[in-house]
Length: 326
Ligand code: COA
Image (cartoon, rainbow, N blue to C red; front, side):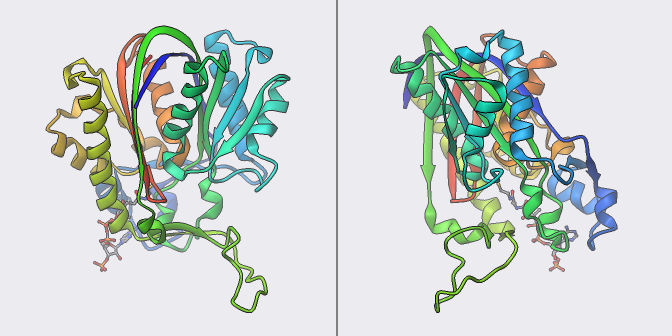
């Protein structure tokens, strides 16, 4: 899918101060720093403290993006927050962000698609600019998934971290972006947060109270991740007729270094083509791609006008890629 005339004016991110290392996890579950590094590439992750909310991180990430783009709150027409760990089921976290930053004329809504949320939200936000419905759209990916971890489950406790990343979209004539989005709901059972929604009623109709908890079939998720990322990256490259040589970096969802390495092998690309920061942040869900872009941009790894490819996958199953220019 082609999207015309959209540009990015500012990136920002925010992670909680608290850090949990692999060594900290050794004291909580039967695992080891060696095992986690070897199987995932993760060394540490930032974890929200008690009282810290998804909106807190989203607000700071957006403020940082607005500062970079020199955007005033009353310029914003729309705020989209991609999150599957909102402050509450309602109000939408996007409305809380809108009020906190004083974006008085902005519409606001959340988009829930787990780790693929940011790429979908970017595609949706870009449509409003392309259609000339809005002039200035904020797209945020923010998650505190560590709230839903069973810290005695070593399969999931090692993977996730918290954070938020944001960007500002505005009209940029001549720019061409490409997206490919997909889903396969037959994989829904392989990655889910039980106890978190309307399905948690017993057949008799009484509410079955249980703490919202992530459940995952890691191997199925791994296979889907590789398959879907290869497919969606190939699609945006083929459709755009832009070659990999013209792409400055592929910025994949940061879930597991071995997943990224498998994708790299299937695409037959060099390691330098991929930006990886999962070692320091773990899987921050919808925040992982914008955090990685913000970090790569601020450190000069990617530069204004560079073309980059984003590749996401996650619960749903859902997946999506975007070929965008900075
Ligand atoms: N520490 C130590 N040992 C662990 C462990 C941990 N944290 N987790 C699992 N193990 C053990 C298993 O019990 C198993 O032991 P066994 O052979 O005695 O039964 C062994 O390690 C291998 O387990 P397995 O599940 O096959 O490991 P894996 O190589 O598939 O790695 C994941 C597990 C979770 C790291 C991997 O499957 C993965 O990353 N999947 C994708 C998950 C993901 O990205 N989720 C988010 C998507 S948005």
